[in-house]
Amino acid sequence: MDTPSHLIAQLPIFPLPLVLFPGGLLPLQIFEVRYLDMVKRCHRDQVPFGVVATLPAPSERSPRAGVEESRQLDEDGIEGFASETFVQVGSLAYIDQLERPQPGVMSIACTGGQRFQIQSCEQKRFGLWVADVALLDNDPFIPVPPDLIPSSEMLQHLVHNIEQQLDNISQMPIALPYHWNDCGWLANRWCELLPVDAVQKQRLMSLDNPLVRLELIADLLDQMGLSQPQRF
Image (tube, rainbow, N blue to C red):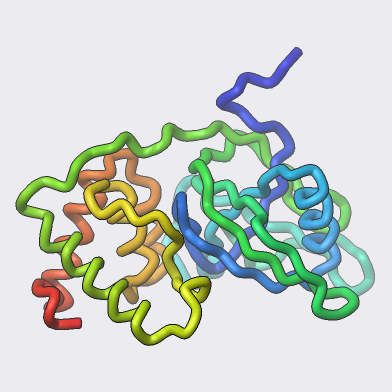
């Protein structure tokens, strides 16, 4: 039986200590055997893998729902539990560029795609997680309302300043094209640039309403004293 279009079966999962947003840029250097093989296959078949944010060890955080505990292999190849845990809402990652700077190392550049919710997952023999996931709806286009226009103007000013300091536009932390009047795009780019922890970024990324996400970003900007473009 065919898999429904909104489901992906056996998606390779890459837990990382960061949150990947749709449309975001993600450079990675790969050296673990389980991920070298995963990246090679994804690049060859032109299919994405999934990125999910890791969380602190259980002893360092309060209990949370929607978290998987990772099982890894020790040096002797014996499977055991590790302190790695990860959330169940992540984003697809598409490999745009792959290089092999030296044997046993891959450098890749990825772009964040559609969000997903893990339905079930398992860890393969050599430590790679795979999951059956349900794709979440893309953010609908919602124009930036008048009261949130300052957040768009501030990001435009910040991006302009970054562009002036770089020799090559390819080094920009934000990919073209820019969508200054799109609440979802604007909120996601702010989430990537603001100095907030992964737990807070994960909460924002998991929100289905892009307008609410941008409103929360505007509140953060106010709290940080970044309410005017000239502050950057």
